[in-house]
Length: 376
Ligand SMILES: Nc1ncnc2c1ncn2[C@@H]1O[C@H](COP(=O)(O)OP(=O)(O)O)[C@@H](O)[C@H]1O
Ligand SMILES: [Mg+2]
Picture 1 (cartoon, protein in one colour):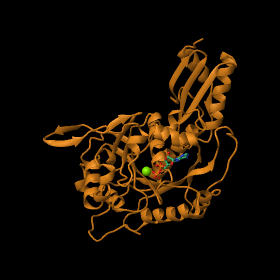
Picture 2 (cartoon, rainbow, N blue to C red):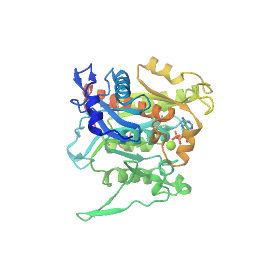
Picture 3 (tube, rainbow, N blue to C red):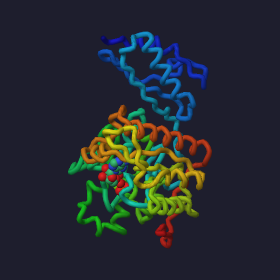
Picture 4 (spheres, protein in one colour):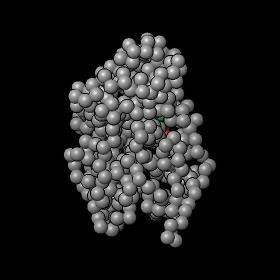
């Protein structure tokens, strides 16, 4: 049977958030409420750092089961309330650069192949599922992979003319506005696209694209430190960066180099946290088992040592790889363990950005200096 939305809301009104002392309906905390057959699903939208999220989820499930019967399937997904601040642009001549974008998040890694693009795709989709406006720019000139991960390979983005000027229109998929350098460069040409051409292409994908209003603009960077990194920090004020690594020693060593680049004098982009990918291997048939094939907690230990938050640990599971190849980011299946891991990661990233915006002043664009280099 199907329960009426009203009757469900009546029941949920009895649940009180200890953090604010208000009930969930007064807090406007219930969204995407749906009821079908004997299934009820909704999102619980609370401040990212609300310590009672888990107990509130449980309270919702319990009270709904008590009311509608134990066989009712209840799906509650917690999503962070977006309260990100608009980043004021530092320099006068930047007025035209991404005026509608609130937060720019650089997604970086020391090494290639550690899952940067996989994490970027899932973060983008997870944030979009919270109702946030999300853009994703795949700036990895050496190996653009977002077209494949979003299942939009071979698509040609459209352009439009405004006041005589041509603008690129991002592609939209899973609620994310997406552009990739891969839409414009053939893989076999990537090598000759290094240097000046790559730099101007990235600038164009940022400045001459109709990104519109975005709560989060994610940039999937090439691995390591490159001209693209330098171009990015010179083109836009980057709100924050996250660094992805596997727990393996060599990957962690390279992650430290990535960290130093963002922290470098004159660049000064706050790194809000580290993300450990392939933290352990879990076979599909033994979901409780963890095998630490790349070492245990390598990045967690670095996070503790450097006093940087560890935003999440994502397991190595076959379906994450398959989902990437099939153009369906794993977080679309929110009930799977990997979907949950990415959704939780997104909550922590949103909270990290919010915290950063509360405690630090806006990042300034890096002044152009022809001698500057971020090669390590
Ligand atoms: N947690 C994971 N579990 C399984 N496969 C993964 C995981 N993370 C990434 N992969 C796979 O590993 C490969 C490299 O990941 P990718 O995101 O492209 O890395 P990067 O962008 O850092 O080069 C891809 O085939 C991807 O599907
Ligand atoms: Mg990649």
